[in-house]
Length: 485
Image (tube, rainbow, N blue to C red; front, side):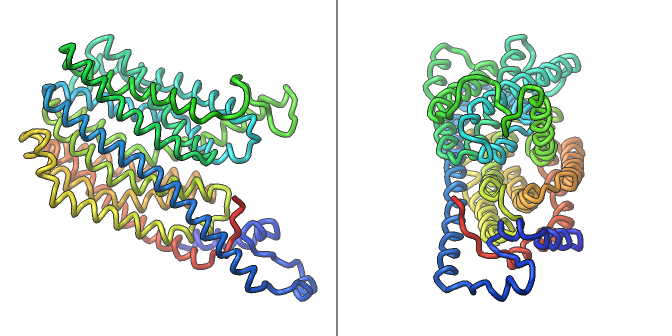
């Protein structure tokens, strides 16, 4: 508690430059204070109206992100209903293990560049935007493909589990590499659009990718192909097409070159320093991104390794439904960071007083909905999915409470640039969660994975909740700020 409050006091007392950023003019002496006219009621009203517009923009961005995810989840739900009815559970389990793993490797290959672009694009002149984003695309696709190749070779050499079944042929392995690269590009693109205040592009891209799967599925099924390879293709191809369409719609200014002119007229000899500086700033976000997202990405991968393909199939469907309870709070925290990344931390703390109760309420609402409607919904996939998946769903959704707490704390630490503290705590949290999932999976199969993960999250909350309470209390001291946008 002392660490958080003390740091905030230092921020507030950081001098006139910091004070003006918060809308407070800190006088240098009493003479200046006595000669400055007092703030009129009209000025206060204007500042409050400006602050309301800023909060409204935050919720619009969050609404766009959540709306896109909601539409994607609904369409993905229909897609997997179709797939589970027409494809053997063994192939569904293998494909879902591959898709979960390549999504994780896309995160590994993203290098933190997406979050870096959220902060950096608003600071750069528009003519540099295109080159900066294209260079990020190239970097993450190469790294993600290379990492996925190593993973594929190791898994194929060791064998075992649903993931090995999904990578058993060279064709499936090649698609795995492409899928990981596509996942990395999507992560960068979906965050880069927030840096230029174009969340609508992400919304359209998600819906486009989901809609494209249905005609492609019809074609594949008519051709009589009903295995894990086909399911991989049906997942990857729409993503790549949606990226191309989104890029065309985004229309970033600047040339097609991958080179980005250094800021401030720095000449060629200084370009290396600029690139190194960019990489260092992105790396701080990268380590934190990996630590934060690792649990939700590793749990399906753990399930794919410790469960058989048939056991993993109902877990994958339950996880698909449960993730909607996770991503809504996540996207709210993303919007919170995107809107407040270049503001004073106290402004973010003030916004948390609104976002936190909304996110917690949504998780509780999702759990109530799952208890009432989970079984009949899962029954659509088939009796075997409903019998096992209903209990899994009820165990997985409450983990969203832990996600809400973690995501809000991470947004706070990012804005305050406390990357070392945030990454250290997040890594410890991941180790606790994954240990619980692995032990649970060994002892009690799919239910054990879900229960073990939930127990790990509960242990984390004992530490995280007091920290978040201290942060939220700082919001009471936040000044009324004029919205620069």
